[in-house]
Image (cartoon, rainbow, N blue to C red; front, side, top):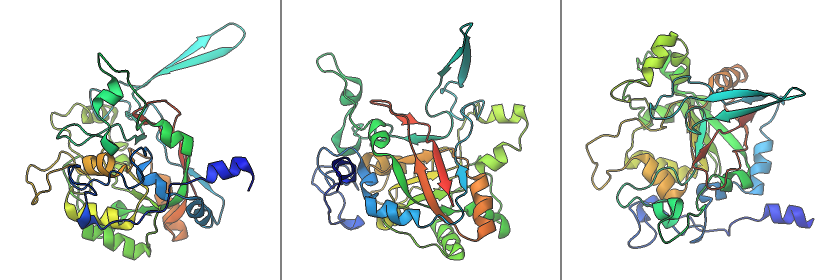
Length: 338
């Protein structure tokens, strides 16, 4: 193999994936974590599941050669759904003989990938593979590092099979009323029914997309109503429930990443009622425990229409996050190819 290709094709060593019930892998690690699965210094997490073989298989899903971007405009939602995140700002710089421009933004105000330094286990503030806030921000005696930053996703580049579970269309068809701006939990059994109706089976390295209908309903609102979403006293959104059953399903299906049109993927806010020893947000276990990237506020509307039209909910998905050394998040720059 040509040396450059050989280097790009290098992958983490094959590892035996433990059962969900056997997590954590090591005594003393956070509950349900898989630290060390890909090595103690790993910063890719579940993206290691996207091997060259997985990508080559994903390319085979392309039948029509139609590209469908999955990103909202950077200035949408105009009023961020999380109020302490700044609005997107764009400025043109007139130079007399040409133009430049600048942007000022929060990387999580619109469509986004969260890197593995976004959300830790809340007990101890421990990020994937033992990274701490001191590694990220530095201390009086140590410099900040780029550990678990978005640059890892950017350097790898993402190309794998995507699978859309269009729960929103299924719910409307079955007369299930739901308010996407409430704390509405999407039951796992309903996602399984959607997968069954779509005739979807999952493969290791898949990127799972779940359409909840948030963006469709949001853009039906008036400008005033849209701005009010981010100003609510209780920031509530539809999503999958944070339960050990849901976590196990994700683990067993070996997803490389997950994304949705809503703001947290999981229902928000978190339930105050623990389930046995489970008292976590999925954010904690997915990102902090497994290194599973989360995509939020993606535009899945055109993709959902196209999948329904062709009767197939699998496609090639490619994504090139911004190369920001030590970055916490990035616009996904994602595209489905069907």
